[in-house]
Amino acid sequence: MEDEQLYDLVFPPGTPRTIIRDILEKFDIELVERGEKITFANMEGDVRNLIAARGKKETMIEVEKFFKEKLKEFIDGIPQ
Image (cartoon, rainbow, N blue to C red; front, side, top):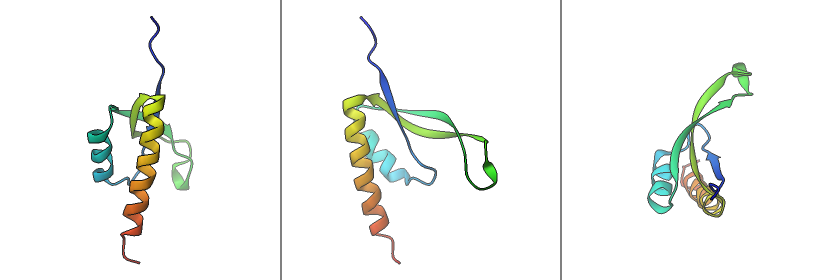
């Protein structure tokens, strides 16, 4: 039996820990570190370890949707 392919959703630097915690509590995913090349500012080409959620495709589609909703709520709640 083949292992099912797993997918990652990389959290951008600065993602609130509360959102990551909510995702961990709500979904059957694994939190992993993943090296990503940074391509902005003075970090061009540097590799930085970022946090990512890893899980099955169907789950990760729901995680991405939930993440976007929570991030929008967080941003909308910041006083201008």
